[in-house]
Image (cartoon, rainbow, N blue to C red):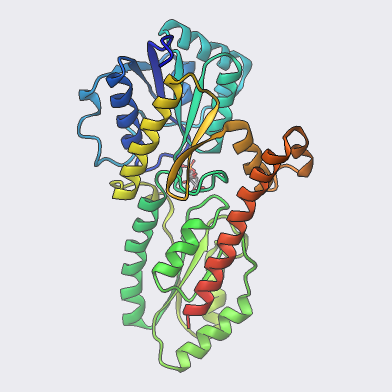
Length: 355
Ligand code: F6P
């Protein structure tokens, strides 16, 4: 263990995710067990900018395993991105002698983590986002709980659709990533699903609903991922009603999907990733994201993870690969390929089994 570590800071940033508390608990307990003090940073990066921190004891993280949200609170801190905000954040780290930080959140959180690392504060990221949209990891904390909440909500809508011979379009969160939508569409027996990753054939869906209605089907569920123009919209439900003759309602689940007690999957992911992050920091590592690949917890360089992410999301072009070695380029491209293949397969599965 690198002896320079006396204190580590922990923060949760961006959209909260069920399981964040489990990660904070694991980080705290693992660090304390190694004789390292823990500073909880309140409200994400704004806690560093505004000197809002508190020491965490083993008792402070007692009884949080079942709790949704984040006991450290969260924020999307614009000030942290300014030179002045960053200087204040570094001053807070110095004041409390924080030797390293574990930052729990999504891609925005990791950009902040890199900025801290570049200014001499070793930082490790833990993926926590219900969107599960971090390209280098197969799993992000919060995804499972969010999907189970959607399933519970849609099952209820399904009951009433069946009673009244209706269709319900259900919009779910995901921030341009269709993971929640496609998985829950399969799990809830939806007739169709609209996601960004795979082209949607509205005419084929209309024909399918008409055919199934003629064969005696009464209730229909269509899942739509948020932010998709023309579809994540009540007007889509109106079109379905006009084109199929099936009365159609629109429901936006919105932030209800982000709350609630973490599932076993998210509790265990929080524990595994939290413990690993501390081990990496104490081994003198920095600028890493803790990832899950093939059910193994692995680490990925944070810059590489962000490049893979930006490339996959179309925010950068192929020229960003130039600074990487051949092996790294392959790793970056493979991460995106894996995501693309996953959505294609899941979408084909939904088509195959939805009537
Ligand atoms: O990233 C998590 C997420 O819940 C997205 O699914 C959604 O688009 C966004 O955050 C909503 O953000 P806010 O909480 O700021 O409304």
